[in-house]
Length: 92
Image (cartoon, helix red, strand yellow):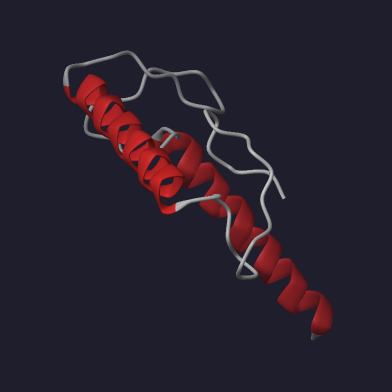
């Protein structure tokens, strides 16, 4: 198996079924990197970095934690509910 740390990429024999990293050090480095990426992403959002909606490309508010604008989320919820109602009616 290959280490999941992007800087390491060494081959190793996993000691458990879910081991992704060759050493504890690689795990710590990768975890710290992920934590810092999330930190800087949230910091950029708080400072007003422009983020587009992943569906309609409208600019998202800095207070919106989602990748979708409220309109797209509402449309998805309506579509999901209508599909469920159709499935229920088909079974009846």
